Image 1 (cartoon, protein in one colour):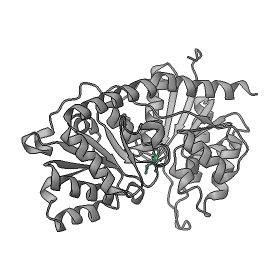
Image 2 (tube, rainbow, N blue to C red; image 1 turned 120 degrees about the vertical axis):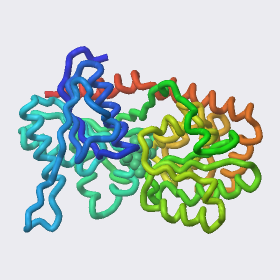
Image 3 (cartoon, rainbow, N blue to C red; image 1 turned 30 degrees about the vertical axis):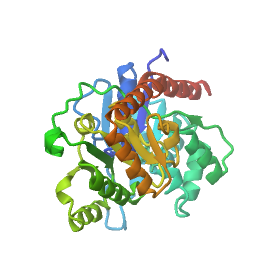
Image 4 (cartoon, rainbow, N blue to C red; image 1 turned 90 degrees about the vertical axis):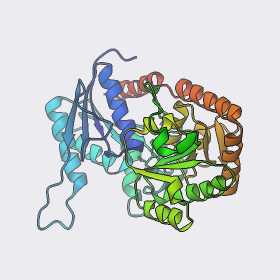
Length: 375
Ligand code: GMT
């Protein structure tokens, strides 16, 4: 553990899951170690609940002006980064997501004539989806090349970054982490499923990459062969299609769409099987959170998911789109409570041991320290 206190800026999207969660949790962990953390985001990230010692939040707003076709958020972010770094003596700006966070941090570093180190954490879609889009490619590449350090949340993402951008620079793989769930209570079980029926759960932002229709098709098959219920947690563009499908197929009463919630712990505490049939996933934080609750995961064998979930040990990994195989796996688990318990226990041990917070925060501190050692 690094002994001197640092002043660190953390810039992220204020999302309910993914990079927003990781950035906020990194910030909270660093503050708990005595560092001063300045969090910059368009709005308070949901995981920054209430007041936290040594964390200062800075809201980034792009002021409109009649001449602007769209208010330039990236410039407002870079400007805020430079101001905060200047007035609070920040040494590090840790950007979560390549654009605009990392590219804005590079501008802030220029504004401060190099008196700020930029650490960029790649989360996935910034490389696999957005990054390879020609409209952003050059800036993502610049952000990767010019950051003082770059980290990626999985080996898969590091390989993908090298493959896509052909940037000849070191990238540290620092996986995401999870903390042991605090006193999970199975209070919502009755509301999600009557008569102690098993519960399948999916949590995401319901974007096309999450393949929520594969969740629906998997459940459709499972419910025909075993009584169960489905909890669909989150919100996003594909929610309406999924809800419509459940109505048209006549099983809407068996599915609860909860919308966005911070209390995923309550849902996971009474979940029997977690479904994540994504088209790609650099890591799959939602799967890790389910595992920490002792829930076996059925996911696709894509991206970084095999680095998190071990097939046949913590759950199952199937080919993208193979909802039949995923339904078979779910049925195997529902019909065999002993196996389900065993896999859930392995999943929990793996989540809490391999993806424990402390050694992962140590790695981030070591990266900061390495950057600061370079004049
Ligand atoms: O998955 C999303 O749509 C959100 C996205 C993000 O940037 O917040 O999640 C990415 O970062 C997470 C945290 O590192 C990873 O666990 C997710 O796997 C990754 N999503 C994808 O790669 C699709």
